[in-house]
Length: 293
Ligand SMILES: [Fe+2]
Ligand SMILES: [Fe+2]
Image (cartoon, rainbow, N blue to C red):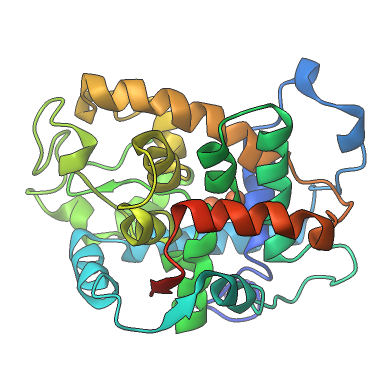
């Protein structure tokens, strides 16, 4: 009999944050770099979550095919779903309610602010701070009815062989592309060091937000947004054979960004009200007043 996992079979995670918490377990912060303020991280060892994350990846790896990505691009890159001022989109994102304990979990806005404030505290340029602040906005996909496995999770190239460096690689046996000779070789439909510009990634909040803001931010910011969940590359180097020299240069920024995303979570809520004037100016400097989703 199948074990009972999660709240339902299509949306196994109790909270989208469960995926991110699992990443911190998989890629713990290097010992010497941990700060005192992070000593009170919540306890990530939760066997329930292990099961739901596993089920989440089973769905993700089964259904994220090349054709699926093409279909989602067609559906979402028309940007005809909704037009919203930036701040309304943030509010919209904050309506993403989850089943986890509301007392211990910060909302999406607070998570974004913790990331961006950690970047700001280290003295990085303002577009880098803005990148931290918006990097998960693509999660609005959830509010358009998309299943979790098509919004979050590690991303990976489609159209070529799945690396065994991707988390839970065994589930790719369930993905029809792994039986398709066009897609199941080392290069698949791509060629050696063709550059990531040529490569389609599994569909989710990273690619969606990249497409949404690509005209407004400098290139390093766009790489950080587009590839921040591509752990098989930025942590494992599993797709070096598809990157060109320019990608490699740009991935230095993706590497720089990742610790802020993974390790900036602290249980203390940021002072949203006090921070707002700074972020209102920052958003106005780079982004149009209304965004089309
Ligand atoms: Fe993310
Ligand atoms: Fe994030």
